[in-house]
Structure formats: structure tokens, C-alpha cells
Image 1: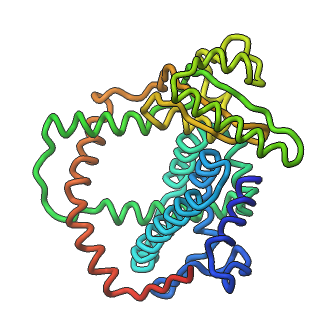
Image 2 (image 1 turned 90 degrees about the horizontal axis):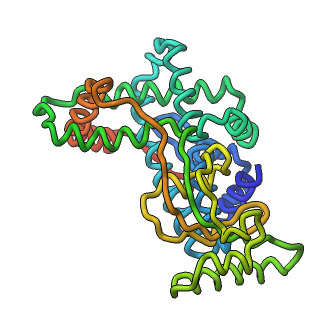
Length: 322
């Protein structure tokens, strides 16, 4: 709930004053007679916005710029989705319920690492019932089906193309509940009042010392406020399910082993040095070969799709309200 409320405050900073006073169910865009609400936009932006907040504890111009870019990107995606939906919505109820439920399960697994309580908290924070969320996913699935239709003949995928696409698919579709990480952490606890500014400044100073070659373990023993400080801040083989969403993303959805920080959570500021990632298992290529082949062919058809989409955008009236 906290991240959603802060997101609404961020909208107020980005929107013109005349629009910032609108309720969250105000209009973000009008597309071919269909309405995209600010609430729909918030729902698309919120998961990544919480990551931005964690990575930018001081907020400021850089945070505002990244949030605005994220909002614009998500709105453009919603506009394209709505253009397609408006032209095919007569087929909406033909989608079987089990297909929609499978999409919801995929979201719970991939976005919330299988944690249903986090998913339910997200629904409460965005003022959505599960039935409303299900209808949103029904629309998303319809659009996905239309987008995946054949937009021209393409050459069969090569072995190299199959291998590259499988590697990408496997990482995105692994069992995230079984991700395990080893990292070092310095945790600077917040205190009451304006002192928090000093605590953030201390974290930033420590980050600079580490970049200059200071010993991580020694700084952790001296300054860290968590239970592993005496061990030099080393956390070994920690399941992703034990971590907050933002920290799980920072550790497991990146590839470098550079130090990350300051990262903010409810109680303090963190510096993380990733030592090792053990990603959850995924299905072998032999079991998903047909799926990977379809994905490669789909990517090859994307150029034809984009040409088609460009023509649609030119024909369909679109009015952005933010």
C-alpha cells in the first residue's frame, strides 16, 4: 500500500496542476471510443515503480524522469492494446476461463514469485477485485492472441536462433520460488525524524568508500545494523521467497555483480554486493522446442506486425490526457 500511495504522489508531481487534482479513476487516454483510466495506467506502472523507488531513495529529478518515461512507455503499450481490443472485442467472451486463469497463475508465479499474499495485497492497494483483474487479463489475452497471429511468411528458425531464444525464455520462465542468492549487505537502520537524512548520507558515503576499494566486511562490522554484521554482512544461500519484491528483483533480475545501493526499504538503507545467483529450474529445450520455435517465428513476424500496427495507429483517433 505504501508504494502505491507514493506512486499516486509521483503522478501529482508529473501531471499538470489542472490534472493532478483528478481522482485516480480519471482518464489517461481516449482510443477509438474506448477509455484508458489513470487506474489502468497505475496498475501497469506500479510493479516497476516500486523498484524505481527502492533504487532512488532520494527521489529527485532522476527518479521523476525515469518514472515519467515508464509512464509514457506503459501508456503507449495500453494505447496499442486498446486499438487492437476495440477492433476485436466481439470475440472477448469466446476465450475459455481456464486460459484466463492460467494467465493469472503465470503473473502470480513470475511477478510475485508465487506469493499469493503479495498478489492479494496488490489487488487491495489498486482497489481491484479478483473478478475485475480477471476481466483485465481476459482483454490482455485476447490482444495477445491477435498480436500473435501470422503476419506473413518467415524462414524457419536456425539452431543458433533456437538456442538464443531458449536461453532468454528459460531465464524469464524459471521457477522463481527456487531462486537462491548469496550476497553481502550493509544495512543502515532509519531513525525517527530528520536524522534519516543523515542515515541516507552515511549510506551514500559508505557506497563511495566501497567503490574506492574499502573492505566490505570491515565496513559491515562497523556500521551494519542487521544480524549478519558480525560476519561481515555475508548472507549465504538466501531463498528469494525470504526477500521483499524489490530486493528479489534487484538481486535476481540483473546480471552484473556490481554493488547496488543505496536501496531503500521500510526500515533502512541497503548496500548489496552480489556474490552468487542460483536461478530456479526451468523446463529443458527438448520439452519446449515447439514453443521456442513459435517464439522465434513470432519475432521474425514482428516487423510485419509493426507495419500493420503503424497503419492502425494512423487510422484510429487517439487523445492522450497526460
